[in-house]
Length: 279
Ligand code: B12
Ligand code: SF4
Image (cartoon, rainbow, N blue to C red; front, side, top):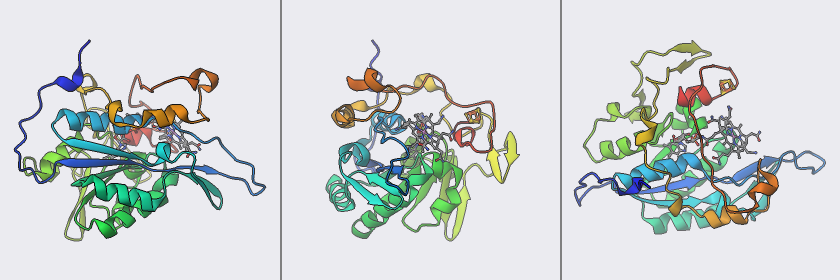
């Protein structure tokens, strides 16, 4: 079997200013009806996108650590009307982030309903780590990057599938690539927010959004060239120990992982962020 983590690493100079990346998976959050009945089941599914990003960062010689707020704090529930939020407490996240000594922190915001908690964590970490670089990504950040960038603790948004563009951002921070060369990157120039894809023609325009064809979208073009997801740095036991599983029910009571067999979509349904993310 091919071990994709054993590919040759870039020759990284020992004095790279940006070497250690901390990836944070936000807490879980489900809706609770006024009568107290839970509107949906808790979920606890290994975060495939973050694992791919971690795999490619490691493959390119970077150090990566994960705080999986959802899985590690699965049993720690609090009711914030009208939601049940579950995950590690902010104080613990801040403590862990400081101990990790990251140069860059990446926050995954797959679901729009998590953005409030994610900004809350990021702002709390920013108070104690004023110089750390903070990057937001995932479906929500892709859909409304300008809105996400309005928060002063957010240094960058990477729109789209960031398996490769997160590595490219690290290369840009270390001076080996221009910011404008990082696909899907939103960054600041003074008070102006720059979109590195500004001049790339869209395939479809709709409701103020640009939808790119897969070949122009901010996505890795050769999926087969990506290393395997770096599950070894994720707290898989916490996922396997969770009592509620979305989808598989009884089948998923054993050790399991997730995979995705295709990316992108030829349609542009107005309620869906998938074509924005993946082309
Ligand atoms: C699998 C899946 C789930 C799984 C698990 C998700 C997980 N833990 O990974 C489960 C079943 C739990 C789930 C649940 C829900 N889901 Co869902 N889900 C998906 C699905 C089908 C695939 C996600 C995936 O694995 N993609 C593959 C990986 C490789 O991509 P990725 O995770 O997106 O990660 C890439 C980028 O997002 C980005 N990225 C991700 N993290 C980071 C971090 C940084 C720092 C950077 C730079 C980039 C970055 O780079 C990654 C690598 O390419 C998507 C649709 C889709 N096709 O994408 C919907 C989707 C994410 N889900 C969606 C929704 C709405 C939900 C629910 C809220 C539905 C509901 N009402 O209950 C729930 C959430 C639970 C809850 N109650 O809050 C929406 C989100 C839209 C939005 N803007 O909020 C999507 C986009 C579906 C849609 N078509 O609209 N979901
Ligand atoms: S809902 Fe999203 S993924 Fe499904 S067909 Fe429409 S655009 Fe494609």
